[in-house]
Length: 228
Length: 228
Image (cartoon, rainbow over all chains, first blue to last red; front, side):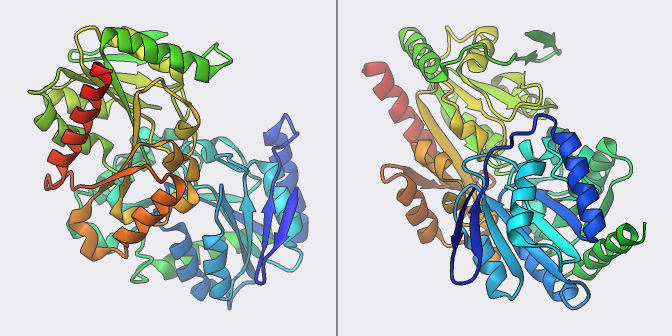
């Protein structure tokens, strides 16, 4: 594992996991996090669905209510960690070395380097991809996915596993609904077809609409996890 | 390999490749296609960048100039092949069985089932993903990627290999430029940073703007390939 320290945040290069049984390892990581009382939320989406902008908007709602940190996973570049750090959010950049996802051990490498003892909530911004990240349990307590309006309402039909594994679908960019043929009801119907228990929240990271509801959803889940 | 015949098109389930050396196998496929004088174009993008809508718009320009067919690769669903077939374009749906990309052998399975002897141009619509498809040479003569305006101009920074492997970047959804913070010059600059030789064409699959230029780029490449 290589580590690089910029003037504001660390960039770490995680190594391919040596664990054969990722599910078992993910369960172990979840138990460790439970003992530490740190809630890990895994955020997934297509490239360009505004994961980072959503986190920025969320941090304004959440950072005075919980001690939070953000782990930014990317194949290359550190623009997301830069953006978050500039906004005053404790961040770390994880480089996956070309890999399209994070597994539990890679997530652990990131968390260890990040230092999570003092944090109540860590949000992992996974690699922008609707396929591979859904296949690997990261050890997170909850999974959420962002579907943005310009992508179209048919994504749950084409990427079933993503919606099966997520507890929450956030529909973002609702400020541009008028300019796209996006059917809100169909988006919900298709997501529920994959996972009847999935929660749905409509937001605009740009205008801030729906962000308080999303923050509330996260806080509720953090509290339940800590109390359980 | 499982095959299912709908009333309009075939759905085939390709199997994981048995070839260890995909690059060698891709080169072999390219040679076979050259002998048949069939030009294979590999189309990649994020989910929701409008690969299918772009193909629909393109087919109106191209179908009376070349004999073309479209292979739609998806993890699940057959909505794209349905759309193309309804528009009168010869199509086949390939299911990847959960896999995030197509390699050369999977592409060959699709082409064989499709029947390409009478086709001048086959466009392969790869799985919506900016990571894995870029890692596997499909045997295509040219690779193109669509970057849509709502995704943001920073994608070439985050997904370097996609832009390194592509001969053409199409910037789509330019009809909504006014509603997004998308810098056209930066998009080109970042793409050229990854690949100085990459061509760039701006289009709107919705309004048809730029589609003639895109069709011309494809025809020029088909002609060069057949003449060489």
